[in-house]
Image (cartoon, rainbow over all chains, first blue to last red; front, side, top):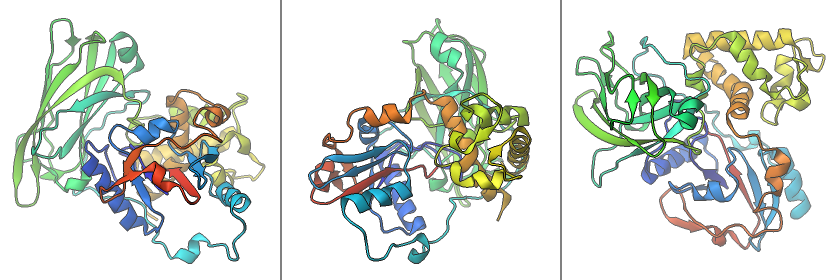
Length: 337
Length: 74
């Protein structure tokens, strides 16, 4: 049974953004069922993330429950081979092992091409963490066609000083775009005296292309932000289809508090990242600090790709191989994202 | 394969976990596995939903073996 929970990596493939409502989560899950073609049932965690929290807050964990409702296996990172072994232990061997290729599943990457691929300056936000930005959802109100992602440097969360990122992302589920002939998105903070920001309002820059779907992003310098003072933010934008543009005004309450369920948006963070920084990231799994990665220093997701990157097949990802991987990833990031 | 798709795969298998390591509090797999609820504990009794919005109680999963997988679609 697959568990749909808050996205671990919003904005990565397909530009999916964190849903704000249960209905949006259910829509994600239904689309995943359809796209992946799997017959495995899904359950959807409610917006308070109760199942994720109750079961340890891991992005990719796995549990086996026995017929009495007791946990009989638990691992931090799902491992299909290990699960098969577990089930053979618990239930017995099957006459014929079903392989993925037997199922005729569609091979799907959740890519969604932008309506118009235009250059819009992106903001790098490496090392930032998501903040809690509560949308004020009105009963019967318009959907949040555009969703705010708010991130900040750790110094903002800890001390109320540093860089604050605002990203207004179109939710691909609503199939709207920016019409750049209409007024650009505009936001405004309501800030009491004790909060000091470099800007208290902003307007997205004009984009030459008639339409696009790239996010509108801002970096704000925070000079002072008491922990107990949330900031009210109002955003106004036009959500457009081919035939119609709707003016939308929506409100958020932004807290100086990390959103532990916000996931990491690394696709965005890579923009503007140097290959040196990319290399550093790759080496963050280097447990013995020797500047190389062995198979055992990769986790179970990375491990199956080890051979692809071990160019000289010596069982070690040495500095040269890691640098090539970093350069390649970085070059593709610059070209494709 | 399109570069963007290939890059997506690269991110997913190599760099994403690195970012996750960098951004999540470090807790070892061993710690996670021994944290409660753990093996021998009952699955917490919670109400969640099926994709059509119908309530599902985790206690309804009793009666057969169930594998619960938290995944990273994105």
